[in-house]
Amino acid sequence: MTGLDRNQTPKTRPVDHKRTALVASLDIGTSKIACMIARLKPSPPSEALRGRSHAVELIGYSQIQSRGVKAGAVVDLAECEQAVRQAVALAERMAKVRVESVLLSVSGGRLQGQLVEAAADIRGGAVSAEDVTRVTSTGMRHATGEGRTVLHALPVGYALDGVKGIRDPRGMVARQFGVDMQVVTVDATVARNLMLVVERCHLNVEAMAASPYVAGLSVLTDDEADLGAAVVEMGAGSTTIATYSGGRFVHASGFALGGQHVTMDLARGVGACIADAERIKTLYGTVLTGGSDARELMSVPTAGEEHDTPQIVSRATIANIVRHRAEEIFEMVRDRLADSPFAAEPRARVVLSGGASQLTGTVELATRILNRPVRIGRPLGFGRLPNEAKSASFAVPAGLLVYPQYAHLEHVEPRHTRQLKTGTDGYFGKVGRWLREGF
Image 1 (tube, rainbow, N blue to C red):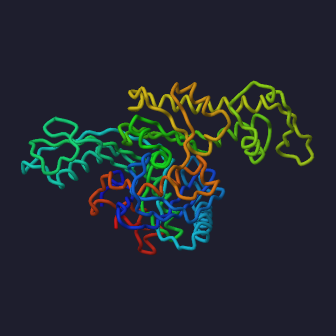
Image 2: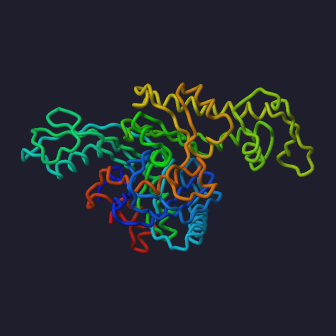
Image 3: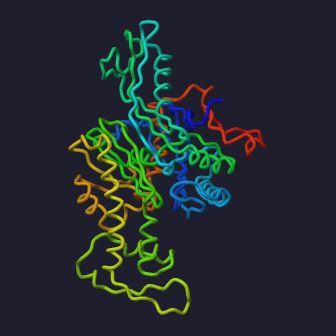
């Protein structure tokens, strides 16, 4: 058993091009838990989404208020477990199927992507599949720091004797073989506890994937991914970023600021309770100030005593509070993008997803701060999505349903070294059932 820092989270088997599959996704967020169940049906690729081999037909979904989660990490197992059970049961009831395993998103735990180069001498003259696995595993292990685990290891390109740009090195002759790869890691504790919650609901974790990566799979067209794009997934407790270049996912990062911080600022700024602040944000939240409605006054119930007189607040006051926090978030996004391959892509655009991207005026604000074209991303290429699931806040659970079609791009550790265990004396030790690693 290797140390946890040597590990990779569960990976799904690539979906068969010719077969229909049933998949379920689970997005355990800070403010909401979403579960979606779909049939993946083999279909010819469309113009905009050439990479997809299957059409996604949604048959059941749910969205409920999250409990026991903060900044994308589980902080209360029992609370979170109850909420997950409820979300899955609702989606199952609608789909009229029972779910055995789920695809799970990860947005907390300081997502970090890095480009890693690894190389080794070739013993037999020609590059074998084993050479590819061996070198990729070595590179992956070097990228995994203490207490971190690998979510994605995606080879970006190969090199033979220092010559880069090799697409498929197998069978080719060289003295030295190298791989450039993108390795996305996350705090192992965060990944483990998300898995633990799901396992306590008697469900298997089929695979885990970084939220901004799967959001990109659902909201980007192939052209955008080819020309370069950054997907900024704006959740309640965290903001995560995936950068695409040349059609590939090349970088990831994130920080623990999101829509919930806007709500807390409002609650403090206008002296309202959190539920009222959330309602004000949803109804009147805008980052645009000025205009005649800014002078409009509204009454806000005061937090605390029932009989206190409500306060009178102007719409401009609310907009200012919201704008300050939104500016801070986009300035952090700008700094993260400056440190990623995105900076070198002059034509690349930014696509916003997640619930917090839906505040009025975010596109204009983001365009100004990031100095790039910006649009709001919604799930693309889904058959018969109900209206509420068409929004940017469903980009992650919808993207998880697309993810199995892209699983073949990832490196998977050989089975005998891959076990993300949750401790032998815990719940699993008693029932003698380990997290299913590989299949």
